[in-house]
Length: 178
Length: 178
Image (tube, rainbow over all chains, first blue to last red; front, side):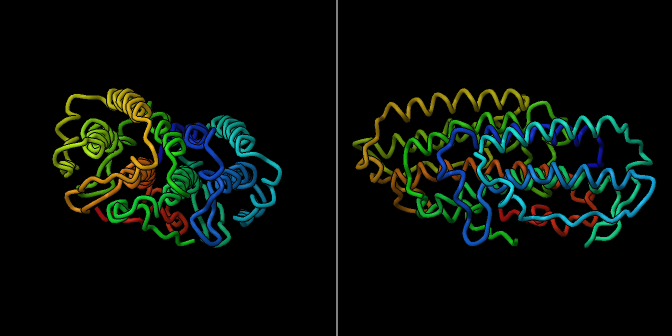
């Protein structure tokens, strides 16, 4: 499947509602437990997505499209949400994510990106040169990866409860690599 | 987390809407592509969930609770959806799943299962004796596993498009074991 702006937006605009549908109204055991060690809970993941809307995708888009200056992206802080989410409920974060995503997609649409724009490059601090099209594709995959993660983390809360079914429910045996 | 009927139902009742929010209105490239080989597309997964509502969880519940007869479950046909979904659109399947799930959860609630009921056993054709509590836990994990699967299959459609980002987007490197 080739990157296509409208096809990508059709997925990106769904993510806040998918997360809200999946998580809102659940007991905190489902939403604040993680999958062990330093891994993230669903609550942590939503905080991470809020942070990404503020500091990651759109600022990087502006860097790529800018006619001047340094094309190197600011490194992304993968742990910022632990500080930024303090005092906020899961519903607060879900609403904030929804609002920010809507604004960001409006901005993205307003750029009227051409095929040439999508081939413009920025410098990722670790990956090196990346095109705008690659970055915007990564945004979609990043969303979907976190939906899968939230589902997996929830599933793991019943790891012991399923007894012999662990054998078939392969999601329970997945060990996150980061 | 210990199995609790109401906690489990709070997740089970969300799944049809989660799937609908995630998939409805998308182009067929997102919903009918799979992750290679004999793997399933999102469309196939929803067909599988519809089939499960009809032939798997509730009939097995009845077998466990029945006072007489053979306690062995009928083996589940993991490929039935390829025949049963024929001629149906994704939206047809999403609606059917929603209706069946609602009916099944009403039936489940109407059983007023006691702690003793949850310890009653059935015989899984391959796993051997399983308790009702294990089976009902597996139902929740099965749902969440398929939400994760649908997200992953969609993510993989952009595997080439993300370029060097593949390194960070670990969901793209997951190979399904079944």
